[in-house]
Image (cartoon, rainbow, N blue to C red):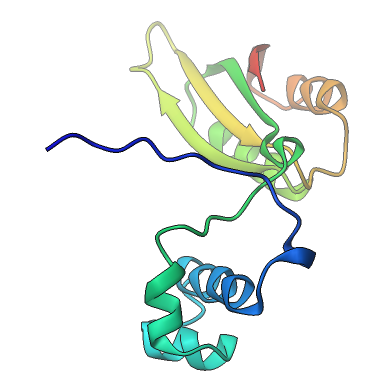
Length: 148
C-alpha cells in the first residue's frame, strides 16, 4: 500500500469553518494536558466528537518560526558541586527555557557541558546571557555553538 502525499495550505483561521477551528482548540487542549480525554476536550471546545474525529487528522497548529529560537551553548566548568546548578538557575532566572543538558565525564577537574535553551521569553539578549554566565564562579569558558 503506497502512502498518499498530502498537500497543505496556510490559511487564516478567520475564514475557516467553526468546526475546524474548534477541532484545533480541542487538539491543543489535549496536547497541553489541560484535559485528559477527547470527551473533555470536545466539551471545552464546544464541538461534537464526530466533528472532532472528522477533522482531527487534517488540522495542525502553525507556530511562527520566531517562537523556536533555540541556542546551544558549550561550557567548560570546574568540576565542583553547585556550579552547574548555578548556571541552570541563572538561565531560569532570565526566563530561558532549558531544553537539554549533556555533560561529559569530568577530566582533570574540568567538566564539558552542552545546554540547549529556548530563548523566546528570555529577558535579556543572547550576548548578555553569555557575558553573565561567563562571570559565574567556576565557569572557565563559554561558547555559542548553534543558533536557530
